[in-house]
Length: 108
Image 1 (spheres, one colour):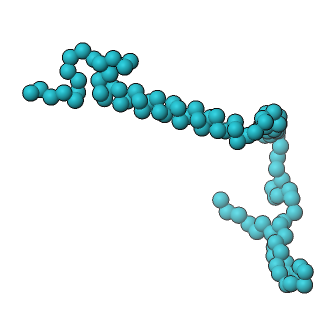
Image 2 (image 1 turned 30 degrees about the vertical axis):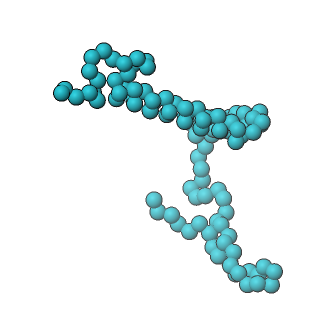
Image 3 (image 1 turned 45 degrees about the vertical axis):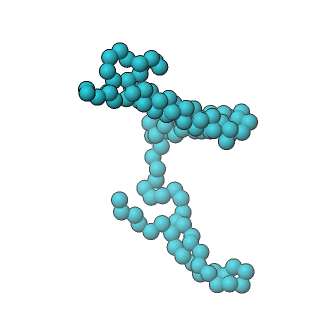
């Protein structure tokens, strides 16, 4: 994607100190954005989704606590998967040993 100039630097003074300020080109960009029916519909859907997200965030007493519950849930699920894998390796199903030899017994 090739970009043209997006703005210009102008020399100015701020608080008695000489500096340069970036001044962007005027909006809307060229070519002008065409908000046809499909694009307008998608924009409306996005704005509605943002509104819902904002409404839910206002209902949360503490966002950090909310996120912590999901992090904790993910950690518990990972721990359970690990425990199941270890039990499988040791030859246990539902905390009861399998009948016969397990994979860690030798044929001596």
